[in-house]
Length: 399
Image (cartoon, rainbow, N blue to C red; front, side):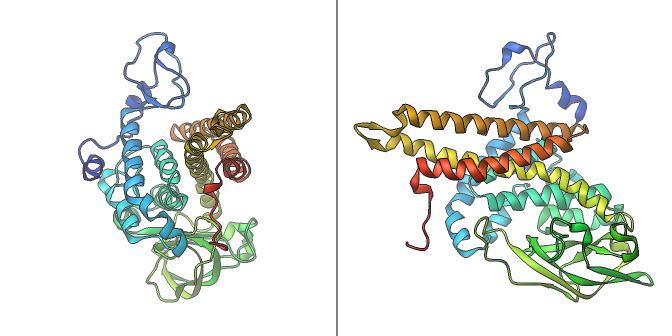
């Protein structure tokens, strides 16, 4: 892993150079074989076509391989322990930072790796094959925390916080409340202006990563008479007086990733800690959640692929009526259906990521990718794969 981590931190870092990057997506139709993600070794000078979505640049391939190795060696041995204890191991968090996976898209001047948005999606997918809780931590840090700072932060805010979130600080996004879940913009948390600072009072629910977070993005209304147009985003450090992180929820799944209530009692925040403009918080939330949908799609995709990868070997090993269950035609029909749907989810997710990366409209595609990947994981994989491989099921109640 030292060599892999060194690659991310060395001169061979990923680059976000769009002209050169787009040049790698020119190829002859005969170069590719379907159904396998691979590096494109040669580029054609004529007969230009769009490359398949599962064709990666050299940097993307190296990153994907490095994360696969990290997930197997550093995460996999701890998955069961973390799930049972509902706690992310410090060594896993430290490893994510050491490998540069918590600042994938950040510029090198801030300690990031300078990679692309699509690289984030590849990383999340690979981590989710082993543990979706670890994938969620990485996804939220890159698509939400880092993105908020780089998109809306002042130069001073970027200089203060980006080196921290790339090195050792986890961010947490505080939007949902007990009475404003789906209707998030009806939030009741208030921020009252007092000279050159604000006083925040209110409470948030179901806040991801709150247990380990060092900085919070708090959505509060500075002028209730304006409705959602009064919502403003504040940057609040964890050690700020009056900020309290409550007991984490005892969840059914993704247990190693914390979900906690967060309360604010007369929390004093300087005016300089407003992210972006006063009253524009609702726009920032919408924008970040749109790209976040692609990240969640990648998480569900990786989880489904990991489940599938554990199922197929079992069907080949288990023998019934003198042959492996994999050899029964009825079984092969089910496997083929699942494999096809898995491939469809991957193409939807990759397409949305490529669109977002190149600055093209992607909201519809992101929503489709998240919907399809989540439904596929929730309905198809958790039922079909569990039926094909009963060993996936953990009956904690009767163990």
